[in-house]
Length: 89
Image 1: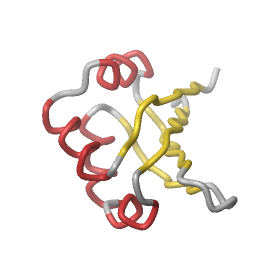
Image 2: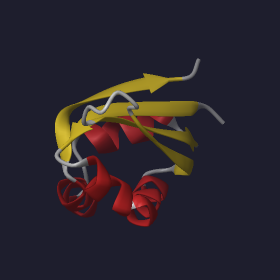
Image 3: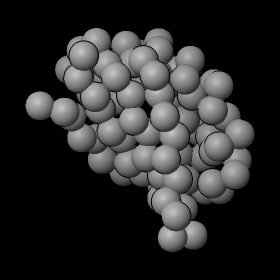
Image 4: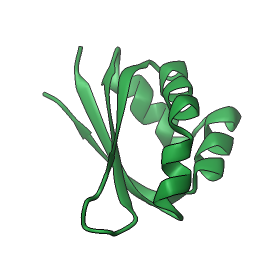
């Protein structure tokens, strides 16, 4: 199962971290497993999410045009575009 890493900025790191359980559910809804939150340690508002995924193409498509519930979750969590996506090869 390949890993995917998604990096982006957030409006507030503590708010973003408080939505961990909801983020795991949102990632699971688009085929992700074992989501791990990685806030930057330099004090910036940069974060990353790492997850195992069933099909990276499905996740890429979902993030390119997020379903309403995923888009709403991203907004609640304070996600700031752009998203940069890395896929394990």
